[in-house]
Length: 465
Image 1 (cartoon, rainbow, N blue to C red):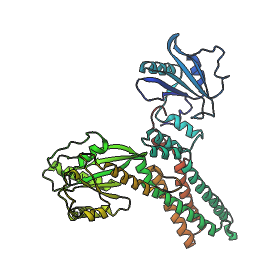
Image 2: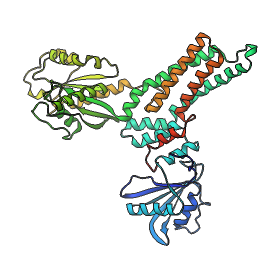
Image 3: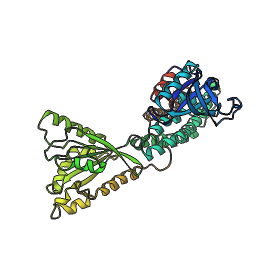
Image 4: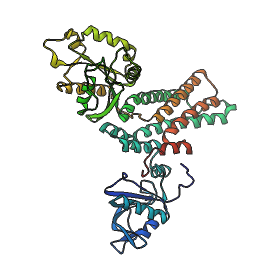
């Protein structure tokens, strides 16, 4: 995305493409009102863009060469009190794709340029309406598909995360200026920056940055959906359970072992959290190349899942048999961020308690009949406990991979500063590591950035945002 033409007046459709009841076309730039004035015929003949207050709406029609296009409403937002920080007009028209295109074509013919992806938000960032992490949260908010991802994006958009980053950066910046002042008086051997205070700040930064890095494990799954892998031997009812949880026939159900050759995924929302349920190929010795590929993918899904539902057949699997099966991926289950839930299926076929029933109870096993949809609510309740246990009390949560990488680099620089203080390195070497930490913190909020980074970030936005 080139920043050289950032002064152009731009336009784009801001509502979803396609036919609807209404559509909104956004115009932003120094000539926004002049261009709209060429096309807009106000119902109130005394209307003028210059005399109208910001955040006002006006009725009229849009015409091209005296040919009526549509009856519209125009909303006016005057600089600097607009989303972009520039003069902005939003045309609300009828949702016909023909009308939308006619208005956009007329705007372009009158002097507008079509906006590039994310250019409205980019202009808001460049005009100081929000920092870079807040701008990125706008895209997350638009893409949010659950209450939890919505709340996470909204909190970041309101600046809770960036505020903490800026506070840490400002404190470190103050120390940098004092240490650099010492360099000007190096021959006099004076100390302007208290090393003990710097140690305290570094301890604070290590604690906070470490907490933010750790929070990514929760923030990422909230943003993308918490992955739940349904695993087990062939014919234990994995596909039936997936269909029951999703309340649709997503997976093929068959008595033939090895029917599921690939992972099947779909998403549902429970209590505001998005969960990605994954039905996997049955774990057994594969009989052909295709089934081998399916089982390999099962192992991959197990490694990446946050929650693992191990399904077994209560009519044939003893407690010891289940324990032996779980031993195959014991190393994966040692991960403290994963949770295993045992589910005994086909309870409707039992005439007596399953073998090792007491042992299963002690492992908090859930007994269900996926076919009859019995006790399925207990699975949902158990899954929600995982989310509740992972909640991070207080503070911001990181959900952006770019922020995570910058925080990791910040932590590395902070540890180098700490080591330098302990070993008594000279102030000039100390400032090198401090400036590295400042640089990486500044990358998060956009205080340190490049055109290439901005282009990459905003190119992921939709055109009208």
